[in-house]
Image 1 (cartoon, helix red, strand yellow):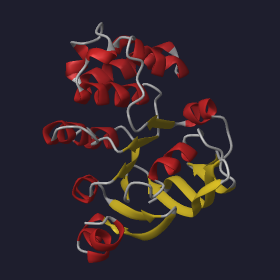
Image 2 (cartoon, rainbow, N blue to C red):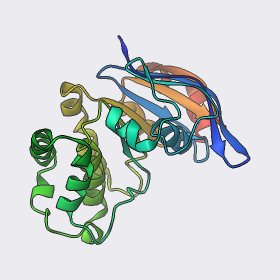
Image 3 (tube, rainbow, N blue to C red):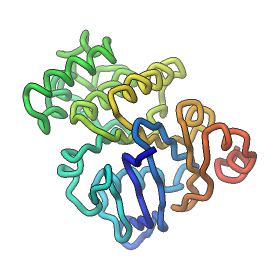
Image 4 (cartoon, one colour):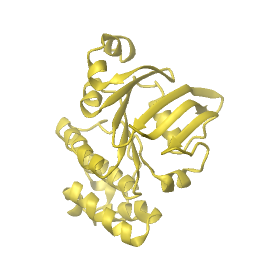
Length: 236
């Protein structure tokens, strides 16, 4: 399987604090990969570094073979990285339609219209909420808006930072059920999750992160049966 996204020896942090300690990771074309780890393991820093919100101090980040490490975030978005941050980071006074329009600004108008139709088919409830302010939506609807906004950038790789946080199980399931459709569209997914069960249920392969390092990796089935994942790294 060719790599949609590959990281080699990535070091990154905030101020004097080094968080990522030489991370290696690969996401294949059309693959769903989950990074598991306890709170503070470095998952959010990892996704923010890939998205260009933090500059790596060392290492390589390649999108379909093209080096993107150190580029500004807007150029990484245009290159094909979509980012759904932890906490969603919506504009509460802007409408659902406004958020879709914002995401689509990096695309040509014709492509923007295609993407809008696609995300509204994927999340039909949003079609009924286009004029509604994001701040008045339920948590699940806000998560859908955050994902839809990222998809409007026409990504080849979608980064999802703990999408299950604060959501009811049935809403989480509805979000994860969009993954097969995204894969058919050629979108690869890198998912950061604290929940071992949820993360492994949605992924083809998994990494376990601890103190900024990848300490285990394998197929979802392999890690589901590995007692070290739950006992040592996730505190279960």
